[in-house]
Image (cartoon, helix red, strand yellow):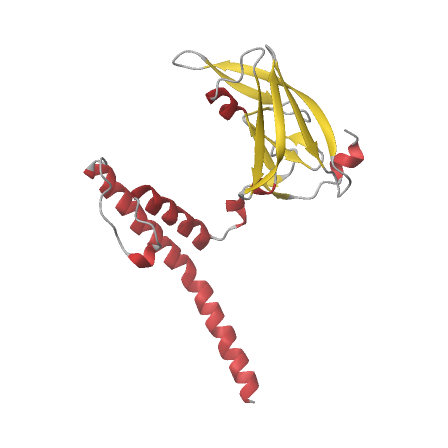
Length: 207
């Protein structure tokens, strides 16, 4: 990879690019020598090509198609090195080496210029581009989903899911309400600013 190509990347978020998660391959038992599989890659909930993996003792071969900088689609093969670290309770944890910086990673991203880690791809998590209120409401929705409530905070509380302990239920309800309060507090300054701007526009039109 040339230095000019590396420097020309545009910043984006992790959700913009397809992901290669070695933990998923490990869960499916695809990291032993001779294993291979083909995945249908998806991005934003829609099909976005396919990728083929084959494994040796220390490497993962990846065959995929990509289109760099709007050019025609090209088939590409990359050989990624696999590292393993010992776990405290026995066994090992697999990692991929980033082809650019050689850092150990669980996830690599297929950018316009090939597979690389989040740091080398200059990618941000979507949450870093959200304001405080939005982040809090995202956590609220995640809690509601875990509790099986659905809807939004405007729909109030639901019941305890079957099989959930009361202690865990009350803990999640408390966290839900705390996040709603935090989101509301963060939203008030923005609403106040919008109100002042609206008053200013109305006043300018009246004169």
